[in-house]
Length: 256
Image 1 (cartoon, one colour):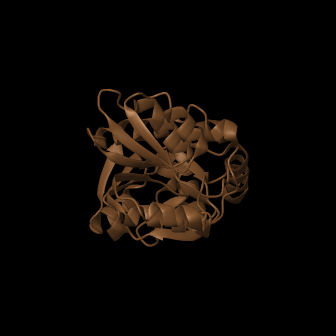
Image 2 (cartoon, rainbow, N blue to C red; image 1 turned 135 degrees about the vertical axis):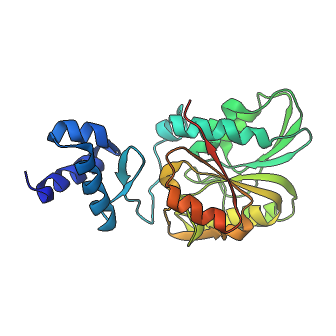
Image 3 (cartoon, one colour; image 1 turned 45 degrees about the horizontal axis):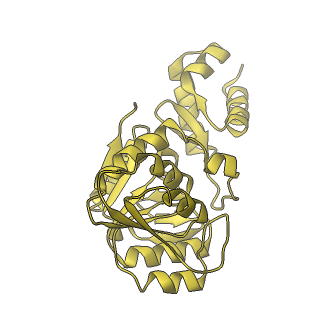
């Protein structure tokens, strides 16, 4: 099989499966792992996919359609859980926090500390409903027009958040890169998160590996306005290096 034919089949698998591993591809195509790695490097250089440490994932579009609730509010991947576990170490007694309605925020709920009292502000009805069960957490929900895909992000919500002061905001987005900063799939979501960052003493981005180095439709904040990035062991080293050079503290969650 010619390299071009093999790469075409690899691309088809990436698009259909969502992720491929170099080891599995080497076995399937009966070639060496080094050959597959060269294939993946060539395909990444041609803008066809994004490499990871163990294989490859699809190249993200600048827009992302709403995620199925069964996925958004599920158990999460190993990468997401590792990031969430590390993130809760930043929660202290008496803090006021922002937690949005993304899938990583839902995972975060599993690891929230119950041995201290703090306040959570959210723009997600699902997150707010879950937080009602915690006796040690005082919960406020942002007011505005309800939009299930992104939570409450309309102009009323943005104006409301600007009246508050927050200790730590756990932000996320479609992508984060040294060149474009943190970005989201819609301008409305980006504007709302920017307002959250402006009223927060500390901003922490939660981004598993496939978001790092990715640029989405609407810019949220520059990296100079971000304090900490928490990602995982498969985040691309080169992009992480560039982000660190811009003054962002980067924490790498380890595989469990």
